[in-house]
Length: 374
Image (cartoon, rainbow, N blue to C red):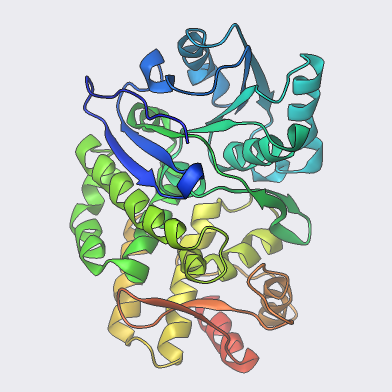
């Protein structure tokens, strides 16, 4: 386990992921990216590689490189094309090409500077290069700060399924610089709020109450509100991941809305809807399924739908087929990672603040899809 950064002089918070020797801190605060102290205590290495994309690189790559040069002799940068559509083998190979071109060894530290796509691909590259090199998550989107950068899931997409090829591989540290959210496009901010909202129904109704009362402040990028949202989201995820690192049981509840959401992404074509947009709509569909299973009432579904809408997210599902829309959804969901022996597994709300993973009859799922995709 690596030592934590010295943040005593800054108004930053830490959330610890407790995984024994693989434990690490999530550091949350402002002005972290430019401060060399943020990256103190990492493994000693001659080289570091910043993996970013063409959108984020002009904004933050030089700042991070300057901070890292206090710790590494050489700091390289590779820019990947931006977007979910590029979460592929071909793009992953750009990272390997750069590592090999600079003769990087197994002590080289990779830094994932960007959103969820960059983080997932950097982590997968780190897990694979020389059978494992260290990496640090430096998420620059709200979605990545509250979800994808935490917990060690790494992957690329396949045309038939999202995140189907990857590995569990934990970072050494997650650095959430709140200042990076100032340049986030409004659509990306809303997408991140989907992953914030999900933590309420599955684990903490008091947090859901707070999100409802603070949604205007969050949409306006109020720093205090965003800091609280990120910290509480990370606390909930840290607790779940600490109990179930490899999603053998409890961790699956973090996928609330994702079974429907991943089908939307695959069916529409990766990048047509942002991941958070698909998850937001997927949560409405999963809540409606929960209602039809007799687990929550209609008021709960309406409450969640209203909040998701206020966050600027879609609440009506897209038509993936003009012939048999529900059938298309079902076919895509059967290749979801949570499916077992061909049975689709859904994260449902088993009463407010509690979640469970269970199957549902195809006929009932068809009713949900028909009702939510109008």
